[in-house]
Length: 308
Image (cartoon, rainbow, N blue to C red; front, side, top):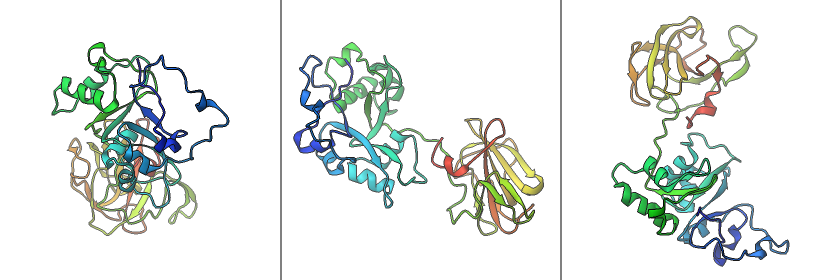
């Protein structure tokens, strides 16, 4: 028996069109509610009502459209969850919030796991995501209670179908994602893509982003990894390259000073790589930041911030 998609209480009927309920209290042999499929039944709203989420004891989830004034903290508070839960569920730290986009929201505290293929079992999922401070048997019981699975699932190894979702209470993913490599982001003076080069006076492809900053501002790894190059590199001036667990490499150019050596293991946001400068082909103090794939192809850094 897999997690059912059921019907919300009348108080939250407006969520019918957008909310999927993780509930297993209704047996499969119940007669279908044909009213749900009638063209006379009015559709629910385009967006869920966050206040309704807070009144429900069962686990519910929906898609939330990011508005112009939304913050991840504000969204979490409105739906009765926490920031780490939304970050884990969406596999995104939300360093930049894309206005008009959608994120998965829910009313629990923990990671909302989506089943990737038919046949995933309760035992397998809980063994993979067990909290370090918990006993597996107790954690499995917590999951059963949080998702209202039948008590028999503790002995029969409950099976899920592709697309089912399961709240794992108290579980938060370790998101080793790309972050801004400076203490703060002032502005981006030159973005990724084609631009008119201020020195060469012609349109050229810009393989990274330029962030204006005072000379001497410390530069940190955008993601933990290993230093694979530290030295002078033509127009980049003094540069540091760091390779990461996904095979990608980040590049930090125009530094005034380098404080690491090749082969050194560095931590995201903690190990100082060097300091902002204006070495190489540069019109003023700034950090040139690039992200390169394992084949050497550049990608847009702003699209990777907050993501793996």
